[in-house]
Length: 86
Image (cartoon, rainbow, N blue to C red; front, top):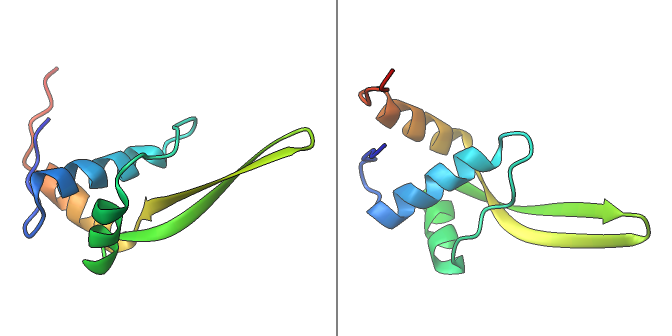
């Protein structure tokens, strides 16, 4: 599925889609470059986030980004015209 979001490059759109999918149960943290993540934060489509995973005594912190409400709205609006094959 190819979508186009105004004022975003193809790489930024792909990163936004990855952030959208990251919110699904069982999804892994998104891996995008700091430059790309910061660009989406500056445009209001993402927010910095920290995920914490625990297993017994071990604790791992992952610095990442999450999609903002504006990012959700832009992504879902862009998907409106995409036809889903049956």
